[in-house]
Image (cartoon, one colour):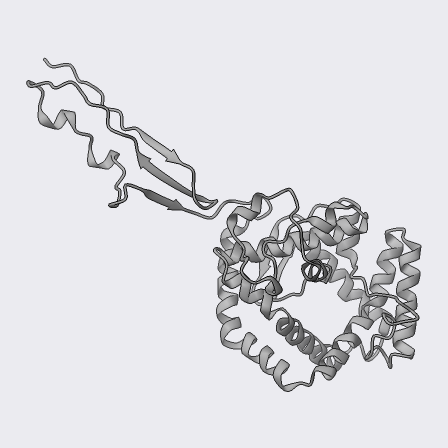
Amino acid sequence: MLSTIPVAVMVQVASPPVEGSVVVKPAPATPLPSLSSAPEASTQASPATVPQTDFSGEIVVTGRRRSASDPLEAVNAKSFEATQVVDKAVFGPVALAYKRTMPSPVRSGLRNFFKNLREPVVFANYLLQLKPGKAAETAGRFAVNTTIGVVGLVDMAKRKPFNLPRRPNGFAYTLGYYGVKPGPFIFLPFLGPTTLRDAIGGLVDRAVVPGFGGPPFNQPAFVVPATGLGVLDRRAEFDEDLQQIRASNDPYVARREFYLRKRQREIEALHHRSRAAGLPLPFAGPRNAGRPFTPSSLDVIAPPTLTASVATDAAKTAPPDP
């Protein structure tokens, strides 16, 4: 009886050209001693055990890298894809038509008006964060813009001699400030990205705003059209960033990382940590074309240099958009 000689199939894993991809190359075959009496089939590996290669001898295996912050990735990715389909067909064209037809001063005035309504929420959360100085500045902004700024239509507070810039804040920021983790990432159909912490904080904020304003700010006749205009405006303003996200290697991952890192920057800034100013975003932004998001940026810890425009964009509140 002939003894069986095991045949080992060796593969060599090459350094992947793109993070998240694995290139497998068959190693050079080691010559086996000839056995004239052995059946020919015993010296050949089964086709099922040999990687199938193309003419270049390489197999490229691609796949989305799992994220600990996104345990619901399978559901979220489907929700993202469905939202993009509807956005391209309906929301996007309507929002861009709104931007083209509505004069810029009118859009800016409406935007300022809605942001001014949120200043009491910002004020309250600065108090919860034990920042009386920032709370006082916010109260000053609200007073100046509500009076001199004609119920908030004009942001007079950011101009001289007041020099009171708007700062985003809310109950989700307060939770993050005191160490509450974001929880699982969630992509809500047609509403956009959030986390469990941010969703809870947003619900609290929305419940507080009508209480501060009273009628008509808590009545459907105001809430429904105001919400619609706000969504249209945010979608129109976010269009450039959204187009870069869609052009990236993995639009879903790009959208997720853009949201998570942007929110982390904002919460880090509440602690005045220097790291907040340098936390990298997944892509350099529309004003820095030619640097799209790539999966390799997901593992970057050392902060690259950001332009002033990107740092300014990251300081804004993340909109509920596609």
